[in-house]
Image (cartoon, rainbow, N blue to C red; front, side):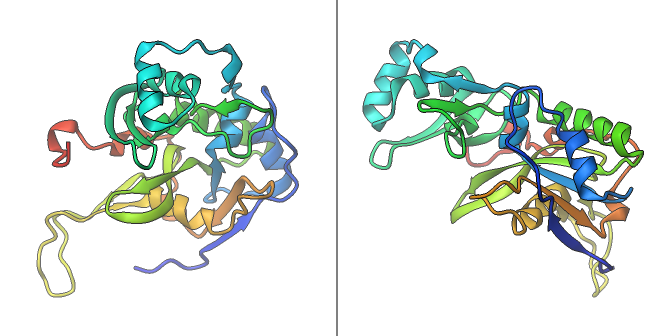
Length: 252
């Protein structure tokens, strides 16, 4: 079944976001939202609103961070922050200065998701939200309070992909959106039973929304329409529900 009326559009006019900024209310006032819409928001502005910026000058790196920093050619203070937000160092590549970790959330990504791009202040970096699913729920509630509509909310970040060059946007937090559309047990057009097909709806919405976002300007929020059948009244299990169990991960 195809999707009728599918569109993505950036939310124009959002100001620079500081700690305590009410993202939900601001988006509700600018976007002209309807129930059944999906609001996809860049992780960076969510982290800024939640006060997740850290000045590297306040960080005292430990021995492990110092050693890894020498091997990878990184700032030891940044490496210390990366290790603090990680449960495991998954891979390192000293030649390219790459540090892949598993975050305490369960994400496997570069540098525990810590980034300095589009962050004001020298030697300042942004950490991922403490709980991006909870962030999405709060923003959804704030939108409803401001506009009396309850769209789904998705928080996204750019991740690299195994065996492929480049980054793609994925959902790291969501509320009110079907995360996985499980097609196992259905039949294809030839009558064969589908045994493994599980469509990553939240990640696909995140990637589609990013096509309407200009990463060099202030368009961190995007409205996606036409996905009513995936929008739910309940907040749902959130994006962490799609993380693969380590016991099923063939590549660790």
